[in-house]
Image (cartoon, rainbow over all chains, first blue to last red):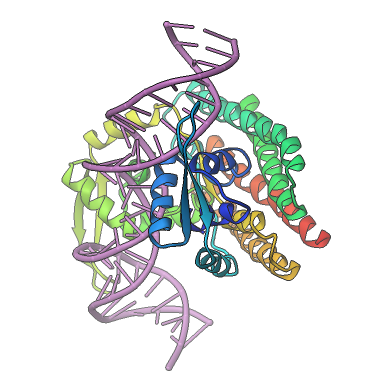
Length: 170
Length: 170
DNA sequence: TAACGCATGTAACAGGTTACATGATTTA
DNA sequence: TAAATCATGTAACCTGTTACATGCGTTA
């Protein structure tokens, strides 16, 4: 699934603005997808042109006006088709591991810094994900969605352990 | 680090052909980077134009002719600079987790299939990585490179556990 | 007064993917 | 005889990134 189908997926649970879609992506799906407004708005525009979503403009007084997008029956059909395709390989690229791999000529202090940068990032992400659990359960988390949460926790926890152990052993 | 610097990094450990670079990427770095020939050859061409590498053509009788690329002093300078920059966030996108997230209207059998597809992939990757350890240690694995290996093992192991537990609990 | 939340969008560009094209030798 | 290994490359395309542009109300 690419941005296109992912946005359709989010809209299947109800109409949303681009801003809200970004919010969902940044909180609940942050640990396995990465989105930016530069992708969300152009994608919504294309989806509208293809008639997979409809746009409803809403004027607001205190806040900027907003566009609420709703998935169409055609959009639902496209999504359903995408959802039952065989799954694709995950994409994982780590700059930190790449640095470690190429670090032969760097001082240990530099290597320690790389490790530390990643430890901070992962600790932050882990804390955010854990903090997210309560709100998410309130707003209706399914058992299967819980797997994606557990996956994230397990991933951050296991790799943090490796990074921390490596740091002490330098 | 993007493809450009990664290829420079590999060439810092000695001259290589594009084919060999691919091989290194597919075996040792496979668990945190993904490369294709369609990226490697065009990148080598650009690097040559920028004089960051030099090409030596070698005629072979039994096998196709090959081009051996060597990093230049300018190339080494570019690489050194890239290596000490602050590290970038890792990129992680999981199609399987995305399917699980959107699976409300799918039958449990379909969810089980998603899980199974990923379990097979991860088991395969884990086995390949473990199998790689011996050759890699023979060809000179540094302590810091060992971290990248441990990271991969920890990641596959921890997430496999989550996926397998989820499968039994469906 | 600085930062954050709300809210949308475009244009240029980078980076990599996919598919195609070729072809001999060796191994199963 | 099918598949794998060795070996290189191009062209079109897709997808997303980065940077820019705007602007009010509220909170710290």
